[in-house]
Length: 364
Ligand code: ADP
Image 1 (cartoon, rainbow, N blue to C red):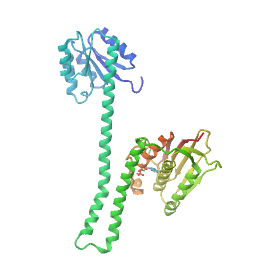
Image 2: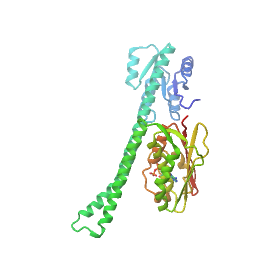
Image 3: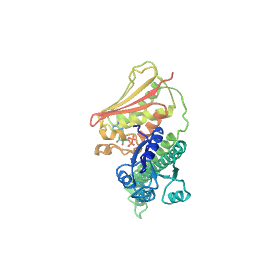
Image 4: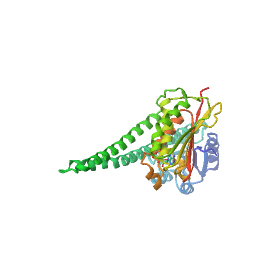
């Protein structure tokens, strides 16, 4: 069975009808389940959620209308589209079918083209509906997370600014208070900037692609992060054995952003005295890989699949103490690498360290 194969439940008491519909649906690459009456259909729906139900109207024990009413009354199944199978194509049948929540009907005797067209159109609507649902859930999640992440620094700013407005502000603490306000404002600024950046990358805004020397980019990164590493007593090394500058087709600002982000993370999540190495193993003709290796906190195995999701942060005490980030950096990195037709992998072991490997196509 294919992963995204649509699943259709056929409910009809007549064997030959079920068999004919099944044959048509299998040709449409659908997965099919059967029920011989309404009672069996409702039983199946307790454990299975098909993408579509084809429901005969006149069946013994329970009519198709009644089955549909049950389906639409249950929050677990109400979203499943129901297409009625109507024997004589009577107008009354069709109207009643729509009244109880059906979305379409097919008439007997079946015409292959008609069944295929109506099933396909309902499956497309169902897929689009699911997509809209997922998008709206993702949007709600973003709004909730962003409001939460903005609220903390905002409360700090409000609290400290109020202290300054008191009748006798503590003069000796003014510097400290101003610093706290600035820290809070910087945090909000970073979150808003990263969100806008991610939006730009994900919306596929055009890249300024040109031949870029990887050697130059990495040397610039090392120079930029030399001071922050020294301040944390870390060793930062560039291991670039090739004399070839290794040209890639890239947007220079975006590709710098990738390595800056990865090196900055390696520094943030590596305790004092540790080591961060930017390594470029011998490249092949097609692609070049850059590894950013640290011997820091590492990442728990169960966190690895979620690492590139927006807002994801590893929730251990050492990680939280090491840095207060937004959880957007790696989502941005992932987006940029993908837009350059590259890939990114991570290997990590708790308390041993991590290796982030970025593979990019070379200029041909
Ligand atoms: P943040 O702004 O929180 O650093 P990122 O998206 O850059 O956001 O990273 C997501 C999370 O992944 C971080 O919060 C951190 O917990 C973890 N992480 C990233 N890089 C490393 C690393 N080199 N070592 C350990 N943990 C890391």
